Length: 88
Picture (tube, rainbow, N blue to C red):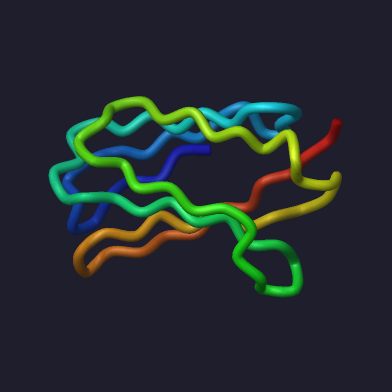
């Protein structure tokens, strides 16, 4: 899943999807600090991680149950949300 960054001036690439144990997020030319949040279908936050200038982030999602989740990417004045399927 790829999202063009509006105010970030970059690209966010999230893979694999569906995911099993780890989720990778690659950031291209992201200049602001980015917060990655994962929400379950009930809207509860189940994971959060800050990307401080990193170009590749690995998230351990092995503790999350099978199902559909929503991954939000937030920085100053920018927010996008992508759907994520988890199948163990």
